[in-house]
Image (cartoon, rainbow, N blue to C red):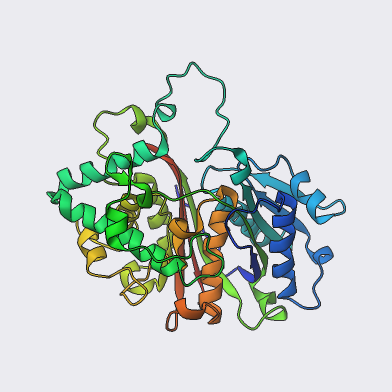
Length: 397
């Protein structure tokens, strides 16, 4: 079953996003305030008191709606905290959009935040529910689980491992080159392919530069009814599709699971394209922000999202198809590779890049006349993920 869709019924009229990185001297409250301040500054004459309801996405940087109401000094407004692994920020956005489309509210805000650097861990942390320790998803680290995509892809499609290694290197090189142009990215240095290929290994053939880092950050979006959008801005962004799927999780125990596709992504993408009326994503989507948690993940996503033929994404990547000047720019803001991954904020950070691109405010990353953009989050591990896909556009219709 798929969603009926809310195409062109709601619009984003303002956004805010902090710089992502190591914010040792800023609290979660500080990050939330900074992102919301930028958002509200973009709509003069509109006060935070005019926002009727809030959705907050955070994995572990706060509990309940009080995390946001305390930081923003909100007086008795509805604040809903949501969590859905790495799709947490997108989940906040999805629920906020549905609240406006339903007619329950006219003005709402989706906010995402995460502060991870203070945790003391080098990777993502999570509190798993009590169990006997044998659950499949808990037995591998994320780098180990995603490293299995590389040999599986080579085996299924007969790709020479050297060619796959070159494509993975190219993904990291591309995203770091894009992030070097972005003042809000955590890592703003171009990295040579030689350095990427020679980096110390983390798991399988994944080196340090094949893995996204962790960081602190916050982002938010002000959402209103589409018919009211021009009361706030001359350049609203219209929501065309919101699709979320959660895998049944059985594949984590299936020895036949082949690690070359994410069925969750295929299904959420198909649902989103149906809602948006997209029939050929390769030519109709102007840019895509995808969940490049690891470099082979981005390659597999190109096929699952319909941007490349199965078995060809590695070759398309090497040919430059997904670079800023390519046929479909992917992660023009630098992606998770350049921003790190403050879980609750990442999905809204992706939308922030689409917002900038549609308004012609992306600086040296600016694309020529973008019309439709896609964002994608993947939470979990191969064999059992949640996948979110949105399609947003600069025009109605």
